[in-house]
Structures are given as structure tokens and as C-alpha cells.
Image (cartoon, rainbow, N blue to C red):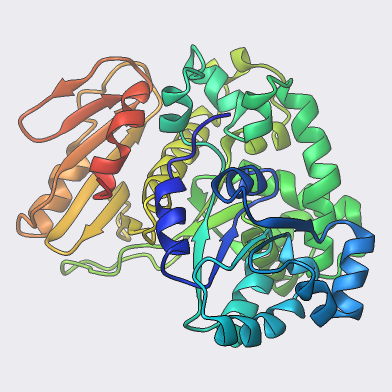
Length: 393
């Protein structure tokens, strides 16, 4: 089993909170992580129809069967339980009493904030990071293989064929879970929507354009994007608000959480296609942004990641906001470093009057270079340096 970086944080939270909820996309390893970290907790999966029926019909009796400690899997399937947990933890005052997992951020967050405020800690588990694969000796040999395979645990733990696994994942989890969140009457239209979203990964999210291409209303596109976010399949990267005297764009950028899923939705059939694919740059950027977000989440911290772009088109791919300033990251998928790769980083530093922080560039090559004004990292180097870039180390 690949050791998860978030384990120490999870154990620490269980020592200090009665309830710990682990949320994240389906098949990101939540159950495996929690069962390994809390082997003495009684286990119940609310995906099981019989178990779920018991929990819904008789929540008190259901919870009484576990004794002192329980791990309740996919708790969003029976959100009524969260109200009953409040009375139990208030009475017994035991830390780490209930460990919950959930694949719908909306349902779990609503229950935690309404019923378990002050009693529960919430952590987010995404698919493997490159650092986790590297530590386990499972890093793919090429960048193209890494992007094609993606980072979902079953592909690496069981060495499954990515295209087949992702096809089943979309059918059995994505379509089902999203349809439970919102009313989707035309599945074919939603499938087109997913593919068009994959084609826009790493781009500014224009809901009107997306809706028009799919043939749905703006409000429907907005609801479907929100459902994909709630299921941890995509995220919106917000623009940094400080304008340094410039007019800024206010539109967020759309990214898939896992680059392998985006590759599948784009119809990419093998790693070799990624060498010359027109969206190679956007897919590489998708992977790097996801790695930077995982570095924060795996340390129990909220994402501090933004991008910066003004109305003239001056853009920096990632801006990491620190208390003392910010770090800037440029992302280039090529295997060589372009001569002008850092021109936007330098320009933003000048606009911000030299705000303190490090400059980085992550590219698709292999060499690590320490330049006077930036650190240049090959894609493999991101395994060891993501924490430093995001201020998580």
C-alpha cells in the first residue's frame, strides 16, 4: 500500500476532535487510509443498501451497535446520522470517536457545519501525489505515462489499464454521483458537457460559451460545474485580487482534479499521443496545479493558490500567497526551458515593487537549475519541492 502523506495530520486531528471527516473524490483512497489509520474502529459502509436502510430507519439503534468507536464510510448516503452523532459525542466526550468519509462535499460540509460545529475536523484527500508515488517507488518512467495514468490509487496499486478503469469510473461513479446531486434528464448532453470541460482544463471558465457549445442554459452549466466541484472532480482556481495598479480579470480558471480523467474524457488512448497533443500544455498545467494543491491539503492546510492575469494578457500561472508576500510559479510543458520563460514573473515582481517571495518554474524536462532570479524544476523534482513551493514544509 502506498503510504499517504496526510496520515500524521489525520491521527493528530483524531487526538483532538471527537469526529474527523475525510472527504474527497470516489476512489481516492479514503476508506483504505482510514481503515489503516484506525484499525480498532468498527466499520460500516453506507453504500450497502441494507446498512443504509438500518441507519436511516433507526439511527439510534444503528449507532448504538458500534460501542465506543466507529468508522462510517460514505456518510453522505445517510446524512441524517450526523444530527444523532452530536448527542453521542457531547455525552461521551471521547476524542476520535467517529471517523467519517464522504464523496460529496456539499452534503458532508452541510452536516458538519450544522450538526457538528466545533466537534468535527474536516480533511480533504485527493488522489496520490507524485511525492507519494515517488516514496513508494511507483513513479512512472515518463511524464507522458504519468499524465495518461493519472493519480487515482487503483491504477497504481493494482496496475490497472488506465483507459478501461477511467471509462468504468465515469459510468459507475461520476454520472451516478452527479445525477444524485442535480436533476440531469439527458445523460448524453451531460457526457458532452464533461468532454467539453476536459477540453477547457487550464483555461478561463466562460460559462456562457460552455453552455452554448453544449446546448444548455447558462444556469444549467453553472449548476453542473458546481456539482462537479462538489464531487471533487474539478476545481476553480481564483484570480489574485491585488491589482498593483492594473485592471485584472475576475474570471476563475477551470482545472480537473486528476489529469488522467481529463485525458480519458479527451479520448487520449495512449501516452505517446501526449507528446504532440494540442492540449499537452493545458494537461501538464492541470497536473502541476493539482500537485501544488495536494501539498497543502496533505499537511492539513487550506489551498493558498491563485493565478494572476491582467486585461492586457500578462499572466503568471500560479501565485502562492504567504503572510510575508507571495511566490510565483510558471508552468511549461516543453522539455527545454524557453529563453523568455520568466518574463511575466519578472514583470509582476516589478509591478508589485519587489514583494518578497521565491520564483519557480516547473517544466517537462529533467534538469534542475538554480538561476539568480528563479529555481527551475524538472517534472520529477516536483515530488520533493511541492511543499517548499507552497509553504507547506
